[in-house]
Each structure stands twice: as structure tokens, then as C-alpha cells.
Image (cartoon, rainbow over all chains, first blue to last red):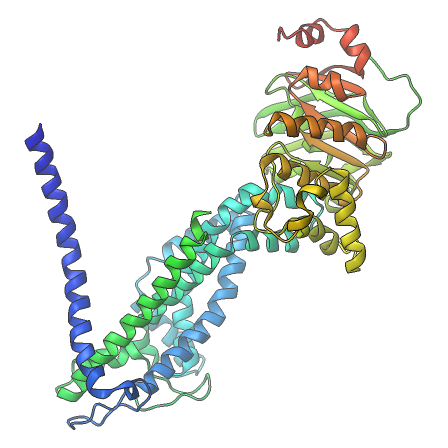
Length: 279
Length: 258
């Protein structure tokens, strides 16, 4: 029996190590190559414009960081209220057919290929409605991707408050809006986590941006209708280019993007440890 | 069935009340129940007899259950509660639940003040503070919490939480306060404090108390109704029901044999 236990332990340990390996390998490669670039380019890398191809210059990724911040910010402005209102409806009317349908749709949408969302948004908003390759088109695509993540998390976060205080709030003669405010307030740790998880998801999202952003990276977007470019698309294009300096910039941008997403996940873990979803 | 013979005005009347939860017929033709004003009216009965369902019908919170179907008549001061706006009804008929359920992340102060502000009852801050203090004093909680009114209500003990939610309900000045086994989830000391509070409150408010404990009904109620399997077996002044029950089932229940 002891031999069998040891065998199972070694198998599970080996499987776990195998799962860890690509994570550390990818992270290690990005950290090493990215750090070399950042060390060479300095902090100006975060602010400068991208370099010309085939030169010795590294320039920076300031324009695409601005583009990413703009479209992620706009996507959050669109997705957050929609997600929270949907989550509230699903929570407060969980037995109603619309709430049940809403929950099922969210579960499907969260698994939906993001490239399909990208091309659909491009066809509808970019072409049919004439928004073109603009920050607005890109942010709509990202919002569509973010909504199910944030909604599902927010519904889960409000589940316990619903069980614990919903009847009490209704029994006080409060109207639905005030009841909703109490449920939202009581679940706010988990709701904020949901918004952050949605944000992390869309920050690194590439596929839908291939259809909705420009592949010229020296653009500073100054309005929602301006063309815009984003960090993940720059990485995609520069990594596949034949120019060494662009490939280096792609490594540097990969590290910056990883650090941003990692930062958001650390914020998520902190909000979880302060109550969040475990409440 | 025993009928009340004194002259106290009636607050709640129940006629031919039937309630179904899904396919289960929970309350079966409850009729002739009349709850006198400024009294403690206990509803007792074994588990599954429909006590809580009856209580939840009085403020129509039963309707939160989509499977619930209610037929019959319940009046509040002569007005049919089923034709009233349920939100308005619930401001007149408050409720305290078995499980203490303050809003745990909200401060002790806001637990009481929130509904007053949200319902537009009190806007003046000084008046709000006055009410918060007065209801906390009424439930004998002021001395225990006055130095930490801004801390979250979830940090209070179970017994303190239950007294806080009673204060929260009282702040709205309801005519009737429904209490669903309010002492069953708290310690003995707090249970005694809550019983004491109930007897004090009857001077200004009508209390409908659900209890599975006949001794508690005997100790603190003026009137008592006995429910069994969804039927109203009998009701009347507590002393009479306990000393000379008119139904064999009631007699067996108060003697602890059902």
C-alpha cells in the first residue's frame, strides 16, 4: 500500500510540475528578454513613440499604451454599468425567465471565441455603422468580451447578500432600487473583483483587436472616433516582423503587458483576501 | 374555537385564508382570526404547521416566493392588504426574522437610518440621530454600542444583532411588528432581554410572534393561536387557551405531547 501511495504522490507531483513548467518558462522568457530591452531603452520605453523598422533605435510603446488605456477605459465604462445592472436583475429576479435566460447567455458568451466577437463587432459597428477602425469600435468589442466575466462574478458576489439580507430589506418597505443598493453594497468586495477580472481579461485580449484597431502604431488617439492601436497588436505585428529592433520592442512590450495584467491579478487577490467573494 | 371577548380594536383579521407553496397546501382555510391592537399575539404550533407562512402573509413577503399562491382575505385596520401597495404595507407591518439579519457591512447607525432616509421619512440629520438613539435605547442596546455606532453591524454578537434589527424595524414606527421565532438563534441572556422587550413594546405596538415554544407563548403573549397541519385549531386569550383548551389537539400540544 505504501508503494502505491508513493506512486500516486509522485504522479500527482510530476503532473503539477509539468503544469508549472510552461508558466515559469513563458514568464522567465518574457522577464529575461523584456528586462534586457527595458534596461537598454530605459523608462522612456513607456512614453516614446515606436521606432522605425530596421534601425538601431528601440523607441518606446507610449502610443500603444495610450491606445490600450483608452480602449480598455472606454470598454470598462460601457461594460461595468451594463454588467452590474444585468447581475442585479439576475440576482433579484433569479426565478424569472429573463433572468434565467440572461444567466445562460452569460455562461455561453464567456466561452465564445473572441475572434468571432471581434469580426462581428467590426462588421456591425466598424463597417455597417461607419465607426471604422476607431477606439470606439475596439472598446465595444472589448466590452462585449468583458460583460459576461464581470456579470458572472458579480452575480456570484451578490448571492450570499441576497440570501442573508434581501428579505430583511424588502420587509423594511424599501423600493427595489434601494434593495438593489443594499445587495450591491454588501457584495461590493466581490463585485470589484469581478470588474478587475474583466479588466485583466480585456487588457491582454488580442484577437478582437486585430479587426478593430490600426496596425500603424505611431498614432496618438485623441477622441473615441480616432483610429487607435494597442499593446497586444503591436506585440503580434512586431514579433512576426523581420526587423530585430521591432522584435526587441515586442519583448519589452510583452513584459510591460504581463506586468500590467499581473498587477491587476494582485489587486484581485488583495480584494479577495479583504472579503470579496469569500464573504 | 375560542373568540376574544374583550373590547380591544382589531388590527388584523383573517378570513378563509389558503396558501399554497408550489403544490403543497400550507395554510388551509384559516378563518376567524382577529388580532387585537397593542397586544402580543403568539402563533404556536409544531414544525411545518404553517406558522411562518401565516406570518409572512401578513406583510405579503410570502409573495417573494414565486411558487406561492394566496387566496382569502386579510385586513389591516379594515383595509384589504392584497389591494394595498406591498411596499406601503411593509412600512406599516414590520418584521423581525428568526436569523438576525442586519446589513453586516453597513454601520450600526446606518442599519437604522438607511430605511428612514431611503423611504423619505426623515431627512434632517439631527432628527435622524435622535431616532437612532431612541430606538437603540428602547431595545436596551444604546449603552452597548453608543461608542461604536460607525462600526459594521456584522461585528456585533448574535443577540445584539437581533436587538439591532428590532430597533431597525421600530424606527419605522410600524403599527404591527411580526416576529418569527426571534429568540431561537440567540443565547439565553439575549433571549430573556428580547422577551422583556416584547412585553414592554405591547404598550405602543401590536406584536405577532411565531414560536415553537408553548412556554414562551404562555410567558409573554396576551393571545395565542394554535396551528396544526396548516389549520387554525383554536385561538383566544392565552390564559384561557392554556388553562381550558377547547380542542384535544391544543391540550396535547401545550402538554408537550404533539
